[in-house]
Amino acid sequence: MSVEMANLVTGLRSFYRSGATKPLNWRRHQLQQLLSMTQTHQQDIVQALKLDLGKAEQESWLAEIGFLEDDINHSLKHLQKWTKPRKLSTPMVAQPGSSWLQPEPLGVVLIIGAWNYPFQLLLAPLVAAIAAGNCAVVKPSELAVHTSALIASLLPRYLDRQAYAVVEGGVQETTDVLTQQFDHILYTGGETVGKIIMKAAAEHLTPVTLELGGKSPCIVASDCDLDVTAARIVWSKWMNAGQTCVAPDYVLVEHAFADKLIQAIQNKITVFYGHNPADSDDYGRIINPRHLARLQSYLQDQDVIFGGQVDEQQRYMAPTLVRNPAIDSPLMREEIFGPILPIVSLDNIAQASDFINQRAKPLALYLYSRSESLQQQILTSTSAGSVCINDGMMFMANPDLPFGGVGNSGMGRYHGRWGFDTFSHLKAVMKRSTWFDVNWRYPPFSAGKMKLLKMIK
Image (cartoon, rainbow, N blue to C red; front, side):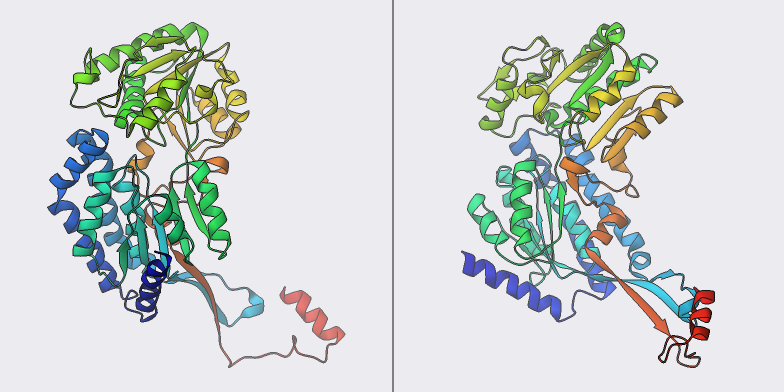
């Protein structure tokens, strides 16, 4: 397999070196083909996501299909602007001259997708790689079996096979592909595998973008709009049955306000998914039995105040609330990545910053409050990949905002121009004229030349 993989990457690199991927018309055509694939096979994609994760069609459209289409259209609209040289100032000492950054593709890149949004999280980075003029190997998650198979079937029918390849498989195939040299690797997934990716990349001094995750806090102040806050927490937490890297991982709320918030969240769960979410067409399923068992283990010795029901045959876990879990329990140490929401009570909401800062930096942070002073206090006293005030996950809908982590939640960023730049080298260029050439920098040196140099600098 490693020989086959080496031949695959060698072929892509040969095609890249031919210069075929650099013309903007070629890049546009590939993006338009990807858009056509997504639109033509929308129902096939919906069905694959339903089989893998129990996703409702509207959820699949919102978070996967429509998201990708918007990303492609945004890239097509701005591609010419992104690829233009970016003018910079030139210091007096280098006059007459001009300076700029010249975007150029990196070469052959590797994109390793995640199973929770197996369509969008694989192909959105590919959009950026195509826009920047790269060839790419894409590796879908083997856990989302049906989506992986569909992508492997469709992508070669729509994109140039000399430039883009799909590698399916599990640990062995991922290990094999990581032995090859790439010009950039983008991986979406967990911290443990992220370290493996980074170690493999280091063998070739390959730069990496790691989109990982972590425990994203949700701070709820008593001055929030309770009804809207509860609706937005429920939407952002239980979309995809909680299997979202930027889902709220736990809630921080004052003791005096906790009961009101809990009741409001319970009410919204019932409004959204009914009294028995297992019967709802809008509520998803856990990806596989292993992850379901992991989630069940988190509930041991916890104060489950709502939900907790499990149907192993259906890979179902109900929307679940846990009150004040032990801070050192697995539920509060590990990223939940499922439909369990711990509610942690504080004496005062001002303690939220300290609580968050005692833990690894999260991928996202949410704050529900009308108070401008509290908003500024949280923004300035905490660190997170992204922050959303008075909503959940909606920052993902803005293609002009970068997406990425900080610290343990990841490194690097993409979406829109940020993705284009991730898969580009911004080559520094200076161009000088020869018609004017003073001798102050040339030997032999003198006190006069030194004086002139200091004046110019």
